[in-house]
Amino acid sequence: MSARTLEWGDLPVFLAIAREGTLGRAARRLGQSQPTMGRRLRALEEAIGLSLFQRSSEGFVLTDDGEVMLRHAERMEAEAQALLRELAGSEAGLEGMLRLTCSDWFGRIVLAPVLADFHRLHPGVVVETLTDARVYSLVRREADLVFRITGFDEPEVVARRLMTMPYAVYGPAGQAKPRAGDGRTWPVIVMDTAFSTMPDVAWLMQTVPGARIAARSNSREMQAQLCAMGSGLAVLPKPLGEATPGIEEVDVGALPPTRDTWLGYHRDMKRQPRLRALLDLVIERLAPHT
Image (cartoon, rainbow, N blue to C red; front, side, top):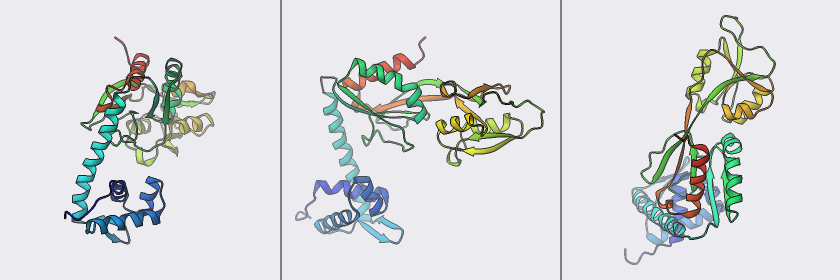
């Protein structure tokens, strides 16, 4: 065993293949070519004299030795990322980059005004906002700050409830609205099937007389636009509904369930001055004050 060598640069390759299951997906994750990934994996296995994966038609499955390697590689990755966070936390000036992630509508309507003020206060800090549907990992340092509607259970993450978001039913402006007992079938726009268990979906189907699903989308922005174009009624966060031209709030006799918005960041980032400055401004502007 003492004769075996391990190149540190091969660990991200091994981790990507273990997590993605195929060379193609792992290559895209690391921005490399599939042949390069294959060569680096073979070189790693030859260097340590062990087979780390079983190859099958469905992809790469860890061997027993691969499972051992995975446990240690993940700990090494975590320590390396903790070192980077510690070094970042010791920076004295408000310069550099912060990466945050949130939903599309929340970023455009709720966060954009706060970030514009933050830039005026701290022009040396570049804030990168990611609004796609991917879940970014704070533990793997894929983002510095995360806003989402579900809480955090990772022990490394510092989290707090930022605000409670009110929702309402919206329909196209100037069109007839549902009334109990009118007998009409009302088209509605709801979340996509992957999010069909969200509380507003069941609430809308139970509350609106004769509700019939006309469209689905995982984007609240898309739901609002479809609503404005006459596709149907939609449950929307009130800030988005109020900011969307061509729609108006509909009184259906009850209000949809609210949702909490949480923010989270890695505990190693607590002392980073630029993150602390952004957190203070976000909390000052968005969190309820008693």
